[in-house]
Image (cartoon, rainbow, N blue to C red; front, top):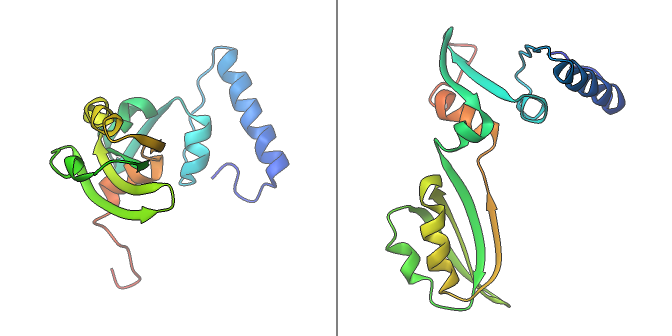
Length: 149
């Protein structure tokens, strides 16, 4: 972990050195379990499981493999969302500004879901792409290491 134990100032210096090396035409290989650092510094990511590369690409390419989280406030009846195959884990609740909807959406279908949301009188909207940690857990979520293992 290259920045383990560094204070935030020195971590920023490390990040700047990595960016300078890239700008000079060099490649920097960073191996880390601090996924927020990897997400901040790296252009290309490879997820390795049991010594085998299981995913590799830019963060944008890898994010297309999973779902984004959507939270919106709408004025209309959100039941149309429950009929969309790309909408997963839909939760609705009443709030002062309308009806709050929260769900995960298949990235390939965000455009279609936005069309449906637009018809519901959107009053607020946040779409959050999956983090590198979520992409990582896609491959490691079924493995919980314990001292007994």
